[in-house]
Length: 143
Image 1 (tube, helix red, strand yellow):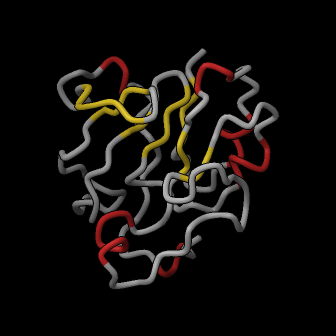
Image 2 (tube, helix red, strand yellow; image 1 turned 120 degrees about the horizontal axis):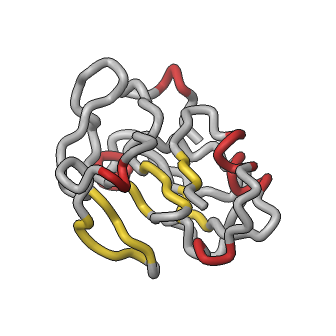
């Protein structure tokens, strides 16, 4: 996990209306069985500056804004159905199990941190625990 003060961007909460806004959030691909929206598109952080990544929003009913995600793992720790895994450390979940990325490396330039991947999105019971615990509000649950 990267500390907020170490970030080179200011996380902006996920757009709660991304599913209704195909213009700004078109489906641009699939990843681990879920839709990806706005991947490859330049989006702005909370300061109105371009995010350093163009990873988009992963998932539909359980959506994680990968440009905003800081990989603290709290969402994984509270999910009662274990629907998340780390993108760069498949099969692993929870605080401290993310793949550590060296600043300045090729991975850093692409991802900034490991990312919370909703690989078992269909297992969600809509308890909203992950959404409420995310410190940067990168998750949106849509029942």
